[in-house]
Image (cartoon, rainbow, N blue to C red; front, top):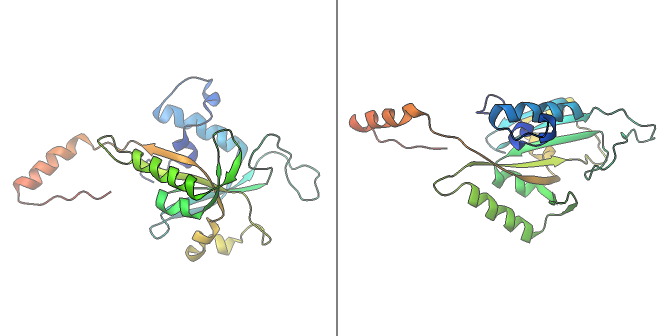
Amino acid sequence: EGEGGMGAAEHMGALDAAAGGKSVGGASRAEPATAAWLAQWRPHAYLEFTRDRRSMSVLCERRQAVSSSSYGQPAVPDDPLGNGRWRLFVKGAVESVVPRCEAVMMADGTVAPLTAALRAEIDEAAAALCSGAEALRTLALAVRVNFGRDGLPSASMLSDLTQMSALESSLVFLGLVGITDPVRPEVAHAIELCKAAGVRVLVVT
């Protein structure tokens, strides 16, 4: 990613309690948020970004000790997404990730089916973030909590580029994040030099 490998937890800016409840920003906010998420989840595998699916994800294992349940599920109270041992955290382009979501986490933490009306609300919110004079680079965040009867995907499947869209499916939509991506100060002068030389400049993001 363009932010020096920053992950979804860093973009989320969540878990401010890890910073002593203080309002912080930039890298100072990302670091405690990342530390707090990594204290709960151990990265197991990375599904790298590809241009066809326009997303990337991290398969994580819950760090909390597993209970004596016959299903091997860790006992973690008050988790609206359940107590499963494994989760796939996904981030990517809104138009790519949202169609692969089946449910949505509401503002109160409950999980509900992702209806057509809710999809329309997400699209409207994303359009507002990525348009206008203060347009932001917009990502969708989602998670997979259920891997079905086949269980955890094999190492060969995790490394198979053709399988990654299927793995990043049956998702729960978590939210949108808008990232400032300001133009570097030297860009304006470089564009002026190009124009003076007769070069037509097209900016593609």
